[in-house]
Amino acid sequence: MVTPSTPRLVVAAPSSGSGKTTVATGLMAAFAARGLAVSPHKVGPDYIDPGYHALATGRTGRNLDAYLCGPELVAPLFLHGARGCDIAVVEGVMGLYDGAAGEGELASTAQVAKLLGAPVVLVVDASAQSRSVAALVHGFVSWDTQVRIGGVILNKVGSARHEELLREALDSVGVPVLGALRRARPVETPSRHLGLVPVAERRALAVSAVSEMAELVSRGCDLPALEALARTAGAVPGGAAPWTPDLSPTHDDPPASAEGPRPRVAVAGGPAFTFSYAEHTELLTAAGAEVVTFDPLHDEELPDDTAGLVIGGGFPEVYAAELSANEPLRKAVAELARSGAPVAAECAGLLYLCRELDGSPMCGVLDATARMAQRLTLGYRDAVAVGDSVLAAAGARMRGHEFHRTVVEPGAGAAPAWGIRGRERRVEGFVQRGVHASYLHTHWASEPGVARRFVERCRTS
Image 1 (cartoon, rainbow, N blue to C red):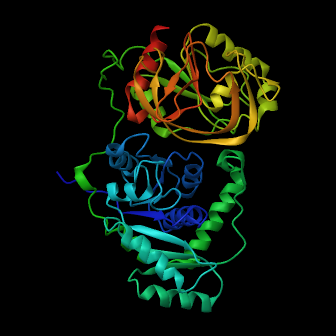
Image 2 (image 1 turned 90 degrees about the horizontal axis):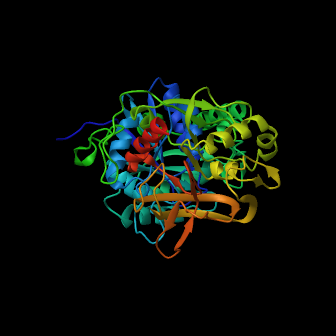
Image 3 (image 1 turned 120 degrees about the vertical axis):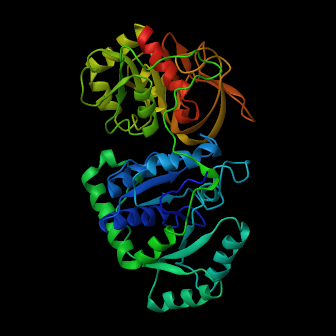
């Protein structure tokens, strides 16, 4: 069966720093300003760009990660997010053909474009070249003929004469130029140790930045031509159907029902905890939970009747003093953990559960300390559950991603959360009573049994 799909574009680049985030976000906002319902997507595990995409479109920004979720889920997750939209824009990651290290095309923008059957718009930093741009684009077009590069947007063009030379050079390649953005003052999107500052920390300024991106793209790009290119995408290959929060049992979990009492699961949010995948909340809800968000910076109590706690990623190191000052909430979290209630903590959540972070007292759930480090830890991981926990049965395999510039000492408890496979064999994280705390970010859509198992523990703990 062939499944029709939303018109779509993938915005890619030869390398990071070429301007694809500015172009993709600006294009989303520009299409939205034309009255289109725009579905925003990001290739890879990035949590920050989707926040800007959501501002641009008014819809939830979603990730498409062929490593974390498997290639087979890319199209279904795309269709789930794009349901009811007029057009979809997918922002790529790194360079077009860059993927998971040592894994060929896996998790690359090129692979996602092929899985979606979507044309690619290549954003090229033209600031230090003229005729050579033709060789560059020709190389990207010919490297993998299954990737359809439908147009080029030239970024950082110096002058009208520079643009003329670039266009003349690209005539020989046969790829249309769909936009030329002049070299100008960069849109104000400040960065720090893990990338752009999230929207939640600078909402008013972020709104202004997205507006500037939209103006830049509207002024320099051929929006009707880009929309027409998106409409050439046709149906998603393979007859994929939209993803749903599937509650079917897995090989390592007993059947469970989403019926009965709805345990309340508190999910940390606010500026300090901005890293989350929308599908996690959808899975928890489908598994029978009532999901309530709270802000550890300001809320002095957990939501009433909290039966389970999820603390995702973010920047507790930036807000260590404020988090520490909220002593009533720290004590409430520690008390919940001592009661045996399920607690799932990823990366920032792990730091929050430690005794201290850079000398500031945290929740003290884990007998460990955390501090900022000089080196960035970054990369995909293949993991196996060392023992039973509220998230997984012993031996269960999941793929995850690490992205932090902090160190937790010790790196693992007496009962570790995960064993990391591959060249870097090690154990990491903590499992104690109902707590599962780890640096590893995982995408629960790859294994819906994780959410179902967690909610079932909330019912019975």
